[in-house]
Image (cartoon, rainbow, N blue to C red; front, side):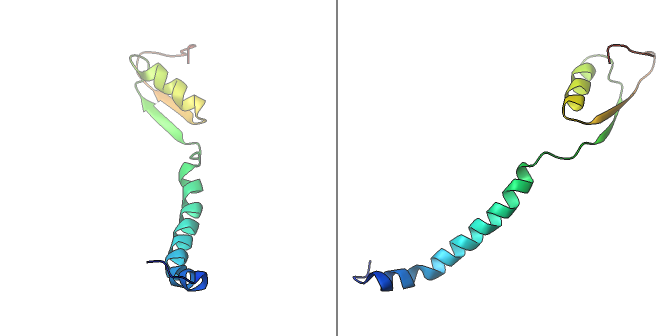
Length: 80
């Protein structure tokens, strides 16, 4: 029920408003960190010359990671 006096109504809503403001300030400090791009990583890829390897290497490099490829049988792969 809404009070006839706006001041009384506003005073009754202060606890709810303060908790909403606290929640909003928490979200505003957490969300930018959650949406930020992670720092580049050093990735060791075992295999990686066939099947999904080339696509995985391209995706890692496109995201700024450094990639070390360890495989057997292929040396000086120019397509990397």
